[in-house]
Amino acid sequence: MAEIFLTGATGFVGRHLVPALIREGHHVWCLVRSVEKAAQLRARGCQVVVGDLTSDSFSVEGAEIVIHLAALHHGLPTLISRVTAEGTARLVQAAQAQGVKKILSLSTVTAAQNPSWPYAYAAWLAEQAIQASSVRYTILRSTVIVGPGDPFLGGIMYMAQAWPVVPIIGSGRTRFQPVSVFDIVRCVLQAITDERYTNRVLTVGGPEVLSYEQIVDTVFEALRISKRKISLPRRTTRFCVRWLERMGVRTPFVPGHFLSQDLIASSPSVIEDEFGFRPQALRAVLHAILSRCVTLEKSVA
Ligand SMILES: NC(=O)c1ccc[n+]([C@@H]2O[C@H](COP(=O)([O-])OP(=O)(O)OC[C@H]3O[C@@H](n4cnc5c(N)ncnc54)[C@H](OP(=O)(O)O)[C@@H]3O)[C@@H](O)[C@H]2O)c1
Image 1 (cartoon, rainbow, N blue to C red):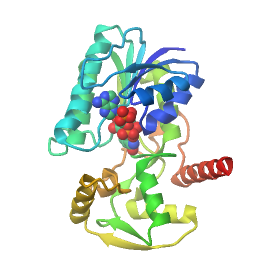
Image 2 (image 1 turned 90 degrees about the horizontal axis):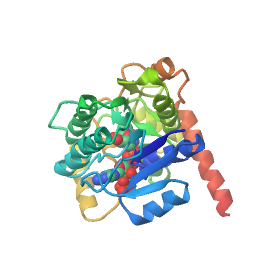
Image 3 (image 1 turned 60 degrees about the horizontal axis):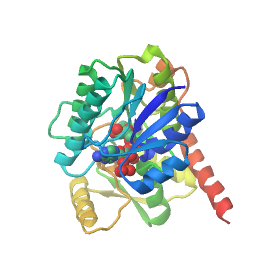
Image 4 (image 1 turned 90 degrees about the vertical axis):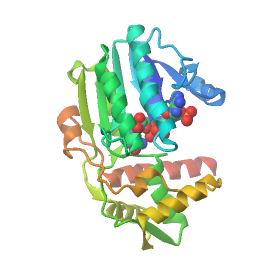
């Protein structure tokens, strides 16, 4: 059992990680921005620090391990940098000053020294800040993470169910290596307790490399539907989606749907090789999502 300080507990991965950490007997302190979300986490057995990575309004005192999930993927480049790059540097400084033994950070395979892609660059700067500190670390660079509540697969599932036609943005040939959030949680739990992963940057991904169009087809198969797919030009669609969102219209699109660059790890067997278990294929993840929906529907009925 460890004293853990967790950022990003209210996000997609955080919502799956929190119960797993509690189940393992860890004592979890979450950095949370809003009082309502703080109350939800308290109800789940966590302690809460209300604060923000962009200010010095938090302390990690007493924590042995920091698990860092908070990041901003889209929006204004300056804000992405303030949260993802500067926020991480601030967290690392606090961890170093307050005697934290280890930082585990969930980063992205897109992290790169490329200022023209704000999120990738901020993620790269965040990794640099962690690696330059004197605190031991593990950085997991992930491909797209899927599971109950994820906006990438969730967006495709929504369009497949609710729209008469399903858009394929660009060529549909951008390749992904979707990894289950349950497998990511397993990797995090292993990495925080096993010294084998200390001071390493590990790229993690699922067992299959699939094009965007193949992912849409797998969703159709899981939902047992068949719909017409239409090709939409990437730039124009992104422009329209941004414009709609600025007008307050919610869309099922997330930045991952517009990627032209492949989002894949170096090897599809990386989780098996490094963590010793076989990650779930996309069909199994879809099955888990759909059976959870059925259970929820039954409990509401
Ligand atoms: N999801 C993926 O497919 C994927 C793939 C590769 C890597 N990753 C990485 O995995 C990590 C977790 O991803 P995710 O999908 O769970 O992200 P997410 O759902 O977007 O959640 C982001 C989290 O960061 C918090 N946050 C944002 N700004 C903050 C600030 N200024 N101060 C404190 N907290 C702040 C959010 O809190 P609020 O609830 O208050 O907004 C939320 O808890 C991220 O580092 C991401 O880059 C994700």
